Image 1 (cartoon, rainbow, N blue to C red):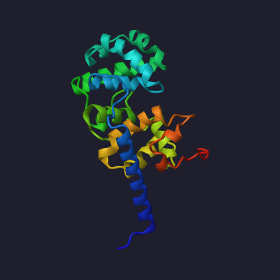
Image 2 (tube, rainbow, N blue to C red):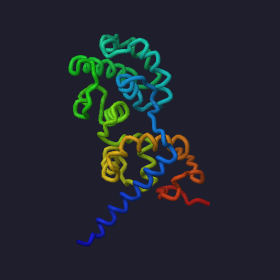
Image 3 (cartoon, rainbow, N blue to C red):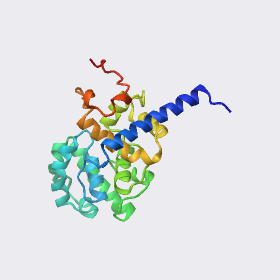
Image 4 (cartoon, rainbow, N blue to C red):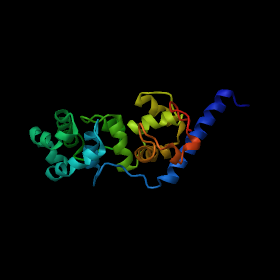
Length: 224
């Protein structure tokens, strides 16, 4: 049966997305999470702190947090005021401190102090939404439950012509449709690195970009 125009367009979009994924792999072969951590528990705590805060700032705060509260049991028993002092510079420190303690208490009461390995269980913890769960399950356990859409991924996927949506949830759905599951984890890590090094907000280095030939440059002025 001949393919319809809609099927051809869907195939073209998937081919475009795969070429971008391969281009990212060539240029950022080692894709690592920018949040410093030694174990899944530390990654979960750091990811909770990263909401509306830079990874650099989080990495400045977490050494003291993990020194004082190296295990879920110790964080679960922490005084909130003490945690607030440590995480104050990350913004929204009262709610973040509450979420950290609540998350640790949830780990102790529901999961024996161990991180769950499903999205459905992970998002039952205080302060853990779909994005945070995707980060931890993908990075710590290699489980592709979704595509992490942070500010870099949101901005650059629109530039590349991979989505027309603006909400992280719908962008994630688009990327899950376009990319095979094997790309879900590394694609986000690599695109975040690309956003920090080349496709910088307000001053993208388009002339240096290894993805320039694939980029639709949506919303950007023509190159001279």
